Image (cartoon, rainbow, N blue to C red; front, side):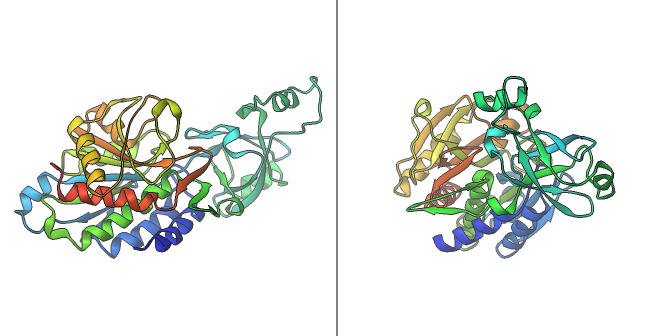
Length: 356
């Protein structure tokens, strides 16, 4: 897959809506792509999509026993309806690690049961006084979810007939999802985790052409509910064969982590849930170096992934995390155009020679 093809696939994935627990649009694209390079593709009861590339030069039982699970999550940060006011305004709260500042005042899609409705995320007027608490919060830059509503221009009764109720997902409108090229970078909402999905799909295509070098099966697991509970990864780690999970992620750019915006992959050594398996992190660092990159080892106490979740819970005995350097995580994110390719090449090199 060329870099241009990766960017085209990325745009398709960015336009697909995928709030936690409702990732069907994203899953359909991943299924199509995996079907062209995997031996088997299926969806498990948790909503995870799994594609396996089987090792051909080792006994089948051994290949399955030592299978490596590569995880990238399907879901995005979003909003969920808490209640509906009498005038049809939606009161929403975060779905995943989101704050109003992550979205701003913007167009949204309301995923009703019978159809998708358009709405506008509103913080209220900036021309009020201290008499209006919402205006005060907006002017002070301290906007919280209780200051926010979604304008629908439907009545409460009409919304009920359309299947909009407490629990309905609200996502950023497709009007604001199209990526923007900034010289050698790409910018968009929801590169977390659409860019790592492209990395996984690119790596799957590469492995399909060199499967004879694999010593274990490789399972590409596109997980559900990562932004909320990591429930998809937890289920997959408990039910799929293998003892190693590697999460593909976006890696925050911050001086405290000594990370920079470049093509050089970030290899996490630990995060808020604990430390990754040392031999896995070392193996990923060596693999990136063999590919000609200058990998960025990082300890990130303000970050977490599917891999650290399953490691911390004991669902998987070993885990690692490989990340694309990313500015503005959970906001209008920016990555290098070649960042996905760099992580894909690093991953494939590791999978072909885990011990380095």
